[in-house]
Length: 147
Image 1: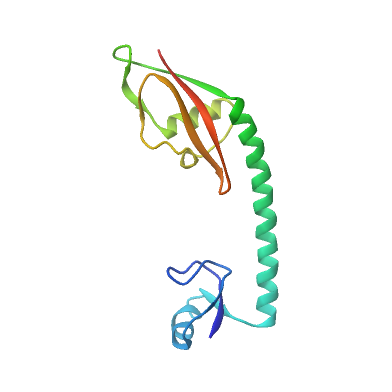
Image 2 (image 1 turned 60 degrees about the vertical axis):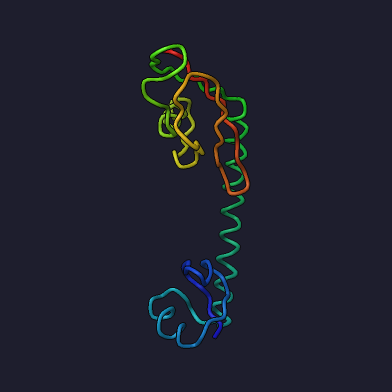
């Protein structure tokens, strides 16, 4: 039986996918729980409209991400921190700290977009990757200086 998934289903597909599954699986699990709808001309038309709407939304998000990337490429973020000697910090600088510092600069980025592999624990200059869009990322220059 061919169905259109309305929500992501593990090991089956993502929302909006047209998949072929066994009849019993579709009738007993996917259709009653609202995870899928049967393939009909009207459902196919709705699926196509949803895909167009999602594509337009992604294009708009990408344009916004490009504007943010241009701003991040020229931005150099200076963050003062308390250091115990000339190198090591007492605490650490996390993605949340960088996100809060960016808010002060006028950029509202979620901490989950800042791809910091581990917290920064020493003074210096770091290039922190920032994921802006599935196709686009930027490098943010962060200066950690002694307070």
